[in-house]
Length: 294
Image (cartoon, rainbow, N blue to C red):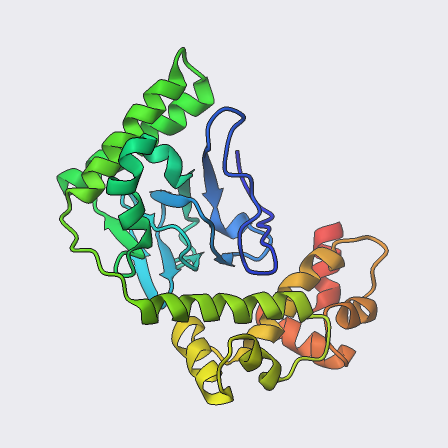
């Protein structure tokens, strides 16, 4: 299963169904450059995520930090953390993605003691899974087994998956983290999601910096600091990039034209849309439209 058109809701929460009919688990391969954007855009989800790079290298951003993940290695990405991914040096990066509902990791009786404290911790947005370290290799091997079982649907495979998830979690927690719960960090994450949520609801309208700051209950300067620190860009640059992202699907519709799309996604000038699109996508909107529609 390949996921190419990466859908998120207004708050950047991913809309992909991360589960089979029976299991609150999804496991699939992702080829980064085959995504509609050419990269995996910023998003978050309630599920915990395990990644195993099977080809090339990737640069993941999790909250404010960027991490290069090498072939054969992987990542644990915690519940609710903003993250995005791009391939490194056009390496044709492919990775296995395992998303799991935290409630499915261990039994209800063990969840409160062994899972909940970890998904709430503010000092554990991610862990690098190094194939050369025993506990990391154990987790990466388990990802491969789970992918195989989901594909083959072997007898009692749901039980096998459940056992492997418990082993994954045990290997993760024996890594010895002293968990922290920083209220300031929790508030920062909440405010960032509020501002992104507001942009994704109103991107087609005229947007001012004051509007974005107000959504996060911040001053203009604090709002800019949040975006600069977490997304390495200004709030209004982010708005422009998001509008271009939204234009990609519209341009693929046979009956659409560039001017209509520009206004639909919030640009008030066709020439400005074309200029920004070209800088972002290395081609004009019309060239993109012809390329996608053959």
